[in-house]
Length: 297
Image 1 (tube, rainbow, N blue to C red):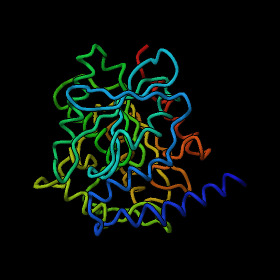
Image 2 (cartoon, helix red, strand yellow):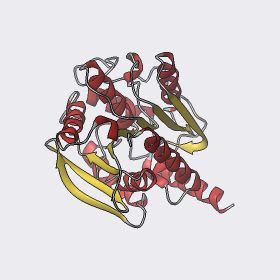
Image 3 (tube, helix red, strand yellow):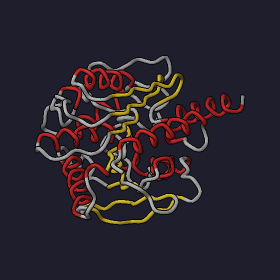
Image 4 (cartoon, rainbow, N blue to C red):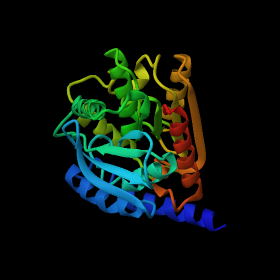
């Protein structure tokens, strides 16, 4: 009963406070300031530690939980490629560090519109190669991300594969945004977080002069063969539900080891409420298990 009440309260909070700000009518600068405040409700677990660092020349936050973390997660934050940061996502990365037993590196990749495609992808690649330069092996690194960061995670793996490089041990994506054309958006009865008009504008700001069907912008249009084991999680109350389902179908088509988990009556990147909402906490546990299972010993 208490959990159902909490779900209802969180849903209404997102709908009344967050969704109106994620509007094309609100300047990006104001959205960035607002999201910094809104994410304060996403609380990391007690005992999580955060350290400002630089990896591959990219500023980042290193998140750890407990002693002697095993393995590394390169976490790419969401925000439509125009908002968000390593600091706003400390709740998610703290819980992921706890459930996976890994250190989590969250880079502050450059954002649009100041830095359109391929700036974010270039920075993600630089951070990946920076981790290798520090002595980590690819099979000891997982890549994860939410929303735009989920799409960016898949695009990074595709770019590394195209270069003939060794890939990460696994991919984990929460509510991934993988089709920026928005031609097949889902229409839920309730969408507490996203407005299609906002994501449409964000897509144009990010793509710049590039085509929205470029597979490194919209991975759903690319060849996914050879990618590492993939875990996809999404809620039924989000316009990106079809993105998650189509990504799973395309990955299976291309013979990628894929697991899709859908959560009824939950919203876009509900994992931000880990530690508060039981189903979010359980989803994060599953993500941690997926990452641990595929890391090299």
